[in-house]
Amino acid sequence: MLDANLKTQLKAYLERVVRRIQITASVNDSPKSKEMLELLHDVQSVSSRISVVESRDDGERAPSFALTSPGHDISLRFAGLPMGHEFTSLVLALLQVGGHPPKLEQAIIDQVRELDGEFTFETYFSQSCQNCPEVVQALNLMAVLNPGIKHVAIDGAVFQQEVDARQVMSVPTIYLNGQVFGQGRMGVEEIVARLDTGAAAREAKKLSAEAPFDVLIVGGGPAGAAAAVYAARKGIRTGVAAERFGGQVLDTMGIENFISVPHTEGPKLAQALETHVRENEVKIMNLQRAEELNAEHGMLTVRMEGGATLRAKSVILSTGARWRQMGVPGEEIYRNKGVAYCPHCDGPLFKGKDVAVIGGGNSGVEAAIDLAGIVRHVTLIEFDTKLRADEVLQRKLRSLPNVKILVSARTTEVKGDGQKVTGLVYEDRVSGEHHTIRLEGIFVQIGLLPNTEWLKGTLDLSPRGEIVVDAHGQTSLPGVFAAGDCTTTPYKQIIIAAGEGAKAALSAFDHLIRSSAPSAAEAVVLEAQAA
Image (tube, rainbow, N blue to C red; front, side, top):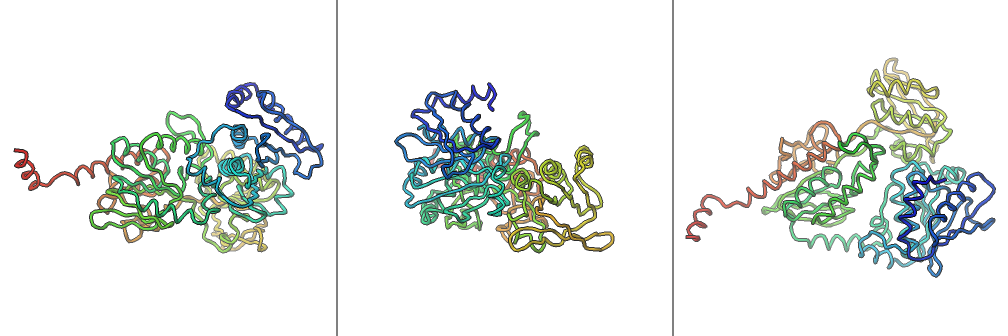
């Protein structure tokens, strides 16, 4: 199962284990059970501290395996094969069950340990989902820290009947005590905040008491991270308030155009960005979504949805963008019930089914190509008279036998049975006729919208809602700068956002120097005093 190189790397990691790990494998006669046992015996072979025992008819999902340590009350289980993106989750779980300390702030560790109650979590993941590992790893760690927390990570592709019965159409989907707890990327801080209902108010009070920042950066994507590093290196007090550090990068599968890095994946780059920022003296404030910007009494203030108010001498807005929605009847009703925005994450859940991809640009065509290898049939729907994707992608798409391309087509409605998507209606823009396609999944890939609604009436915005900036990243409000995909800067690319973030930080620093310099009259007085 594991090649020699991977075994060597795993052995090096597991040398950090300080206590015994017992793996209990619940198996049956299926091929997947055989694969899982092969994986577990490979893991066992690289560490003398790991033992594997087999169990049949024990009432657990099969194939699955539990990780625990003798003398410790830990309930942590993987159902299926934690390979692909989830192999890292397995390695971390082994380290943490084996006593290796987690890389987490002590305050968060204490908060997890102090949670009172019985919490049984189940997370459905797919091996190709780049968002799933953060959820799986967060809940695994919480299960290690608190005996009242139990977690099972379930590979939806292996337990397809269970996925269908629960109508799971988006990963990660998290259940708590049998009820849906959440969907999408979620870290330890966010999960704890939802369980500890008083945490948000305490955090808001604490943040509001912070001294004013020289530079406050709103948003933690590539632009925000670059701005934070450049500002901190100037020796000024720097803060980053972010809803989720990494931004859109977290939802990006493969990155092959970040110069000097031939290939990486979004979550890896996001982690590298955060690590780089944390190496500098930057105050990072997660789970913070801005809702109002004001300038009063020579100070800028940013109010957050959670109630905190942060003060700063200058502000850099790097709030990024989000997937554009179709805006048709039924889309919101069936979001995560067949309407999806991430083919890499949710594609495996539609194995053998009929789906549509909305959008004929590079993202849409790439999504259709990827899905064609999983689903039964893909219908690609493009509003324009022709596809806009690169020619090489179009040739690949047209070579696939299970893909149909519709151009000059406008989606007008998402159909469903009250629980899941059953089809969509589109208008032929040439004939004006309406047609219904029966399908079970719709993947929307029609571009991005800037996260700037909260700034209307405060700053100058373009007709597209982008923040208008000059060559220095300056906005229409003195002391406020902006960078990245939320601005009028052309070409929405990671490397461009990072560069614009650095420029905005340098501009903010220049603004602080100029605004703190004494006036001509003050200079005369200072010279006289010095004399």
